[in-house]
Each structure stands twice: as C-alpha cells, then as structure tokens.
Image (cartoon, rainbow over all chains, first blue to last red; front, side, top):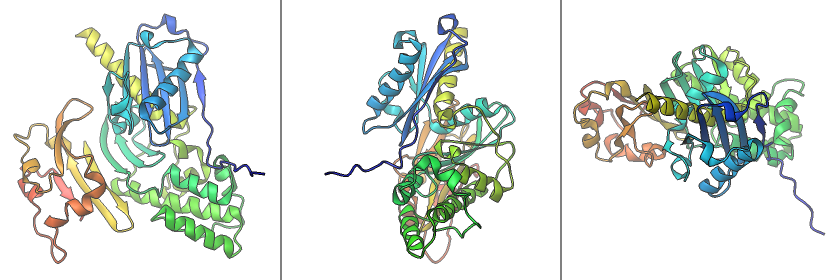
Length: 292
Length: 93
C-alpha cells in the first residue's frame, strides 16, 4: 500500500467578491494580475476600488497561472475579458501575461497596493513574498521613494517557511500560532541560508527540542534576517507587512518586537497587494487616457 | 527614488544603490558605457522617467560582475561611480 504524503507546505488559496456592488454599474473596470514565484493573484477594481480577487498557487507556466487566476475571479463575478477596460501585469511573470496591456514592476505595484490597503499614512512596506523579500518606502501618494529587494536567497521568504513546514510535518498555516506555544524564546537557527537552517533544525530536533521550539527558532531567524534588510534603508511609520508571510503571526510579531514598531492591521488579504496595485495603476492609465 | 539592487547572502552584502531622481536629466547616462561588465541599463521607471537600473540578469551576480573593478586589497574609485556626474551611484562593497 502506498502511503499518502501530506503536503504541509500547502497554504490556503482564497477568493472574495464584494457582494454589495455590481460591476455593471462601474464606468471603469480594471484587472491586475500578479504572477509571483509561488502565488498568482487576480484583482478586479471598479472605478479604482477593490471589487474581487482570487489567489492561486503559481504553476510551471506563467500564462497558464495568469489565466487560471483570472478565470477564477471571472467565474465568481460573471465578468469576461471583454468587460475589462485595461489589464496590468506584475510580478516575476509580468512579461509573460498574454492578455495584459502593460507590465509594471512589482515594487511600484506593491507600493500602490499597500498604500490602498493601509491608507495614506503608510510609509514603509515589508513585502515577504514566496521567493523574495522587499522593503519599500512610499510617499503620501503611494509613489515609491526608496526600495531594497533581496531575491537571491530563500532565507526570509515564504519558500523557506514551506521547507521547514515539510521538515517538521506541521501545516504551514499553523506555524505562526505554534511558534508561541513554548516556555521561552529559543536562540535563532541560521538566518543565512534555508539549507543551513534546515540542517540546523534537524540537529535541534535530534537534541530533543520540541517541534514548537524549532518553529520558534526558525521564525526568529527569519525575523532577524528580514529586520537586517529593513535596517539597511530604515523603517518609517506607518509600517505594513504584505505577502503570504504577513499571515504568519510568529514572524510578524517577532519583526514588530525587533523593530519596536507595530505593523498596521488591515482587513485585506495581505497576498493581493501587488495585483491590487496593478489594477489601480490600470485605473490611472485608463483615466489619463480618457482625459487626454 | 533610491533603488537598492543586489542581495545579501552567505558571502556578504552586495548592493548597488542608484538615486534615480538624479538620472532623469542626465545627458547620455555615462555610467552605462563606463561599466566594463555592462551591469547598467537605461529603462523607463513605473512613473514614466528614463532612469538607470541594474540589468535584471546581473542583479543576482553583482559579487561576480563587479569583481574585476574591485581588487581585494584596496578600494579604488569605481568606473561607474566616477562616470556619474551627479553622484547618484554607490556600492556597498
């Protein structure tokens, strides 16, 4: 009998439609697609306001992932591509989205999306993506003034967390809560490399550490690594964390503790910031074109 | 916009910082030609300005791409930094 292997890294895909609004009443309907290394998001905005979104796991092929994310949001809203006035693509796969009218960098889109999600007082954004980590400063208009991106090493990214989830056989969605179920905060494991961190985590388990203690040590390592990046360009309040790792309170709370800054709470799904920014850029481009 | 291109890994921090606001009115963008490794490109930023950026293909290899200009014993002026008339470029070394 073949034993079924559970996928502990599998995070929850999500979708949402604002049922109080009808897209048929909108003057401008825009679509933002963020094809990231791990997740792909599609966001629809009506007249520059968030209406619907869909997040899926990115497959091997960017166009297929973009199509699937878009079809997911269309299936829930009844929209078709013909109803969309403008589409902006962003993320790693932004140049490979066949139905996009324009590609804009994820730095600018995350800045714009986080500005919408957190409000005009947001000045520092930490985006913890699947395989990169970005620190972005924006002004009161959501325009990027300073950014730093670390996309070479998986330490401090969602993929690193997935590796640890699989190693410890703990669902990635439970890691944040479990990292606080410990007697005292352990020292961090290696924050330099996911491979080193994984082997160090295995060594700690063999020494008799509980899974929760190892999780806490990894969350600590990830937080310290990310904070060293943030400190390179500094943190200005208000501060917001976006990306999948923002949902992991084990990392988010530790980052707040190290920085001494509380992150802005938001009701939006932290993973949609890039696609939301893309849809908002699309709205600006359409309105500029109409005025011109 | 201050753009930090590069990375931090087990071997250290390797960032090139560009103050792209100073690139907008820079005639000819001489840093691009000055770099023997062709690390820099001219591109339109998301706000419509023509600025200098580090080539996508080089961002993860800055340690190696910039190594020929960075001897191990001292820190001579780098060709790209010298070529920039506005002091917009710096390296973390």
